[in-house]
Length: 442
Image (cartoon, rainbow, N blue to C red; front, side, top):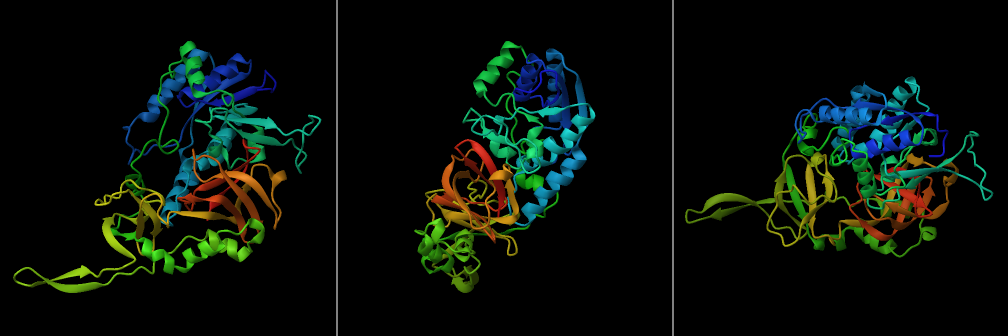
């Protein structure tokens, strides 16, 4: 926190311990601080914590502001939140993709709509309780580096607490958004934040961390999605290992497996990043006679490549890599979702974490979905760079090569990744802890 001490800063006060300690640290550092609590959701359908969770959060936030001695304001951002986050989330699930509403909430609400409200109240900067860090980009002599627009460039760094690092959720921020942001607890570890809150006797000191969808809360996802997406029963198909040797996409994976980024053509990268389509596993019924009276019945013919093992309530309610909520028994190891087919309303599953259909080495980000937090480090067409990447929050960083081609940006991992999921954000880091870009997995 090296900015001018008398600068007017708005803290997004949620009622949680992280934002509370953020407000306290800003106040102690001499900033002119005020708190702004935002309500982003009214509908309680599908939530698991009761009807008035946001009211309790607001009450705690207001007590924290009073304890610290800073002004407290309230703003209702439910309309832009529904339009920019929730409606997008419903649309993505309807396509069979799995969005990340927390990433969108930061890009579209906290550092956009919320920041606009804060600015109208006189704020020069906005602060949040994220576990991440920000610093100015400097040259070898320590002088600030500017971008193409002549403005200073900033780095988005992982939080010092590896267990709480939240830089992933800020992966879509622009330089403009980053320039007006403060992250006071980014250098701290969670136990230290709790200790500061208790010593200051803050009302949120022992409040549990929030869970679930950003500003909606912990939800039963199928119930929540059924507000707009229809529930339609369909088959759960288990895919056997015998299917893969004859599948052309999988065979191509194996043929290209040993090639380096420099050896792969645009077409081959596209092949490596394309998920397997299981639509060619088909089932036919046969008539048989059962019991002493030889009553005619129907059953599915045996298929060497798979078997219908259950029924689901709508393919759009499930995501690749998911293992809970399938309701299918009789297996030694857990079943994992390999793919969802929305047009046929079919879910394909495989047994065990090492199932052949669960992992692949390469993913693609469409050209219009590529986002550089550091635009000065953007790759040109045909360029590549070693990075560390992750495809979901909390996943340990994975060694990979970033490859920019005419048909998209590819991440080629050193080792195959389990559960690459369309709609989620892939992010990449350089120098281990600087998040330089991200994109939606195609």
